[in-house]
Length: 168
Image (tube, rainbow, N blue to C red; front, side, top):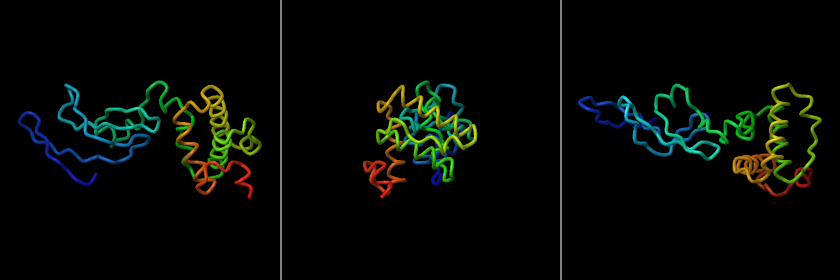
């Protein structure tokens, strides 16, 4: 939110905060959008969600947090691999990241012992990830993008080294 620009609406001049490049939850602002007919002079933005869908959102909703994802059926709201827990830096999040990388590397039966010792929220997410992967496999672009990034994070930049590389 660095620069401001003037926009004319009827006889009023309003200030639109430049949102380009800003991230709000799962949305990244990529362009200014044409406002809907009853926008009330607000600035609207084209955003790309982590799941790949686009959303047109008012700047006010972005800034106040009332819209932080596309919420489309089949989008990130339904995809456990887009869960913000996978961006966490703590033990249970690490276990879930390892699960995603195991699936990405083709391990059909990952070791679930560590996850089973976690709380119900993290266990539920693990089972949702397994169920989603069983249904969609590697045809899910969100899974591929997230798992590839997690593999690079956990395996030191070589997403294709698999479990053997992680052990050495």
